[in-house]
Length: 419
Image (cartoon, rainbow, N blue to C red; front, side, top):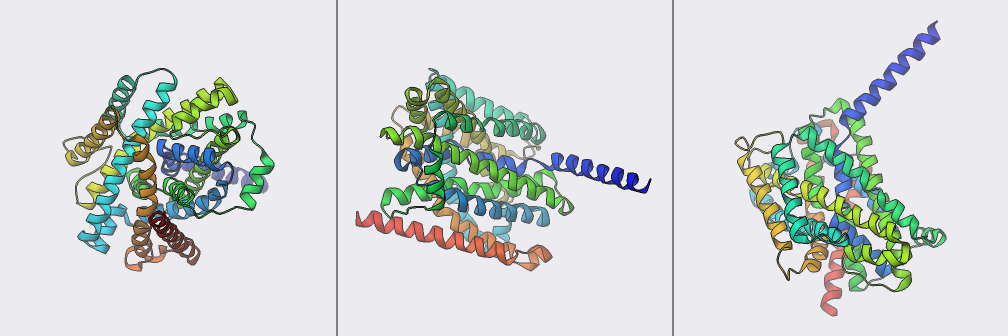
């Protein structure tokens, strides 16, 4: 009888934890999935087409750093109840905050433009004009955020996250060489030319983007997660990071096993979708384009929201999807302006979309160390975090990431100057 009671108690405890986890699930998976946006898909596609499987090794350090960074952001948000921009202003001052926020704002406008370029490109594969797809998508994105609630938006975003797994199917249809993939992962071959370094920084910049840190922290606050629920948030972060890296991995594999092997050079993710048709079949091409469309719509919603969040936080304005326009006019006005600029640039006849796409990802990689330094200093401040300051392992990984990113950025600048 006693053993039955224990079993019953454990079963109730197990199901209670499952319910709690499902209730908290969201911020980590959404943040991770949006990292695979149109700019990211373009960067991964170019990496696979140019270098084959040789850059797959970047997925291992990217996963480790992604988990560590998102965990720190979630913990800071839960413990302080404040967004990252708010904490940077309080601890680093208004001037430092202004320059960080201004740089991030410009970068994220470029990133949002890239998302609408992804919408246009993916729909062109299905013979839909950008003059139809972009305005309709922009209006849909605006309506979802301005007229919706956080709970509704989060459910839509989780569905979008699941759709990104179509890249796994697309890659497998390209018949990749798994022995070569294993070799590339275990024995990476480094190069130090400008193009290789730019792509590496672009991969890191899109996998671990600056906006991600602001959004993750804002999302756990918006969801009202408490410190006693932290372990569930940690699993949310880990699952989101796994999804991010798996999708990125298979995008590189899809392009490496088809485009690279046939010597096809691409400049946009749309080019990859079109080039896959004769190499891997119509279905693989359609799945690649569909994944690009979903990722672009998804990110065109989240990126302007995240940008509006951290700008408003930095300067003390009200922000939040659950607030009405009259309660947070600056938040919704900035969100609307970013959508109009991003969609508007795509509708220009000769907009330099390739340059905007690739260099916005590189800018993410260059801006990332600056924000990381501020974040690490704050998360190790006992006056701010109390007993929830970083453990030594977190600090080692975070500081190593900063040193490596700065080193790569400086090497890229020197190489560009020499060339």
